[in-house]
Structure formats: structure tokens, C-alpha cells
Amino acid sequence: MIVGIDIGNTTIEIGFLQSKTLIKSYKLRTDRAKTVDDWYLNIHQIVQIEGDIYIEDFVISSVVPVVDEKVCSAVEKISGKKPLIIGKDLNIPIPNMYKNPEEVGTDRLVNAFGVVKKYGYPAVAVDFGTAITFDVINERGEYTGGAIFPGIDASVESLFTKTAKLPSVNLKNVSGVIGRTTVDSILSGIYFGYISLVEGMIEKINRQAGYKHKVVITGGNGELISKGLEIDFVYDRFLTMESIYMIYTENR
Image (tube, rainbow, N blue to C red; front, top):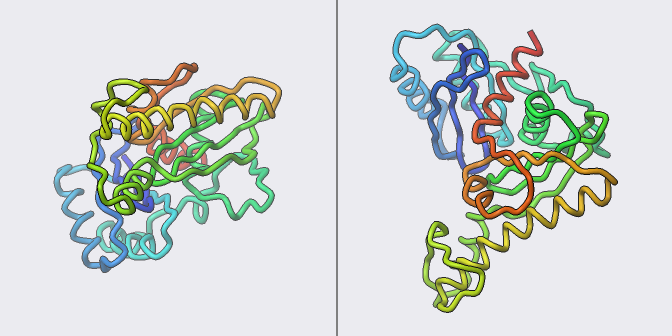
């Protein structure tokens, strides 16, 4: 078994993986103020919850360097050896055609590799995280780039912090496109706006490439938005974690 640690801008997911299957996962807030000792206590407690298990390695994917340094030190205290860091200790085996390859976030390449291994190519990985990322793999299996948008939570927070009289809303209560109250109008704008974003971007990506792509959606809010899509897609909640495991095995 390995423990995958996915350090994102908002949350950290800690997953226990056996033979590519995610057995269980936990989420923590990405708190940049925490010390090594704080992370040690958090992660050690999670490991203890899982009981008497053999952990072969800890594998880390991170886009927050100031946090991953502390998490790495905490993990080393727990396991007695250094964790393996994707992009440093473990190569992501996908051709990277970005103009400046080092600019691409590890999380985007991890998802792209996972999509190639699980679903083939050409394909687009759409990740509904802190930001919404579209990552494109062409007909030769190469990562070619994509697009980045503000995430749903960030957009909602911005709307309510800068607009005093608007009420808070629950995206699960969307009734229709044409809102007849302020709450319904906000819900419509957010929910159907992001649906149109995904459908429109996929159409434009296909048009620019000259061929269709498989669409793989992941991330927490992706499940909610995908229910309203009128395009072919796969929703894969565990794509990133399973990709971490596959990268680990590819490097062995």
C-alpha cells in the first residue's frame, strides 16, 4: 500500500491506495501557517486511524511549495524515510509540449497522465478544483496545454464579498435557467454558466484541433456541474489519486 498526498491550494487529500484502488481518503485544509509538528500530528493521526497496515511509500503531488516542504518533513518523521515527490523523485511519463514545460502545475500533468492511462487519447481532463483547469492531450498522446478559470467557490465568494445585498445560495437547489427571484437568478448564473463554460470550451478545443476529444471530469464540484452537461463525458472522482499511484508504479 502507498499513501498519496495531493497538496492543492485549498485542500490536501490523503489517500490510501492498494493496487491502484483508492481504499480510503481524508481531507485537510491547506493551512500555510501550520508547522512541521502540526502536520506531523494531523497525518500521524490519520495513519493511526487506518490501523496496522504496511505502507511501502508516501507519494506527494503538490502545487504549494511552502506547504510541501513541511509535509515532507512531517512524513519523514512518521515513516522514517523521505517521501517521493512527483516531478522531482518521480517522473510524469507524458510528453509535455507546453511552451515552457516547467510552468505546468504538477496537478495538471498528473491528471493528464491518468486520463491517458485510463481512457486513452485524444482527451481533455477538466478538474473542478480551486481553479477549473482544462488539460488537453492530443492524438499522439502528448500534453499540449489548456485553459485555467476561477473555480466555482472562488467565484461565489467574490460575488458575495463584493455585493452587499446578495443572499448566500446553495447550488444544489437550482430550479431552472430563468431565475424569478434573486436567489434563483444567482443559482442559474453560477450553475448554468459553468455548464456552458465546459460545453463551450470543449467545442472550441475540438474545433481548433480538428477532431473530437474524450472528456474526463474530476474534482468535487465537477460531479454537480456534470449532471447538467449535454455532451459525452466521464466523471472520475478519484482520477488524481489513482494517477498518483500509476505514476509511482511507472517509475519503479
